[in-house]
Length: 192
Image (cartoon, rainbow, N blue to C red; front, side, top):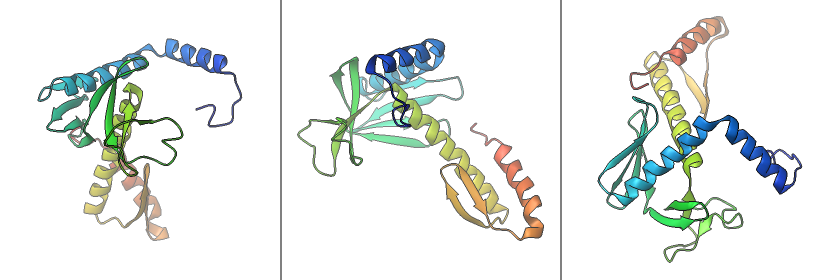
């Protein structure tokens, strides 16, 4: 991330910073491993569910047919098509087929596979990226639930992004709308 923001350091300095961060955050590092193991075990044992995370807030992986499914705490699912476990630099690696993002090939994210095409490639993932999917997916579900609740109350939603909702209201109603919206955003849905 530091490289993205223009922080200058040698590869050795980056490795030291990474190791220091991981040493201070062992529970996060363990959660990456737990999530990755659950996903890999699900691919290796189709039809069986493997969960990771805190009780009642777990993410669950299950291989059904040609797809690996990730069930979020909200019960919504994310699909990873045609997963395979390949040997990677750090042991077993979860791979799946997807549409490539711009620059993926140059960044070395595309894995050689006979099924690869310009619009469909095999890529790999790991525990940290899977945790990111879980967190971002769960945040999306909170936002969607809030938007539905606001819509039921007649709110005029004119815009939403990945982390905000914009309402259009008359100036005289702005403070009441803000308070009402804050109440909706602070009320957890039953699944949470």
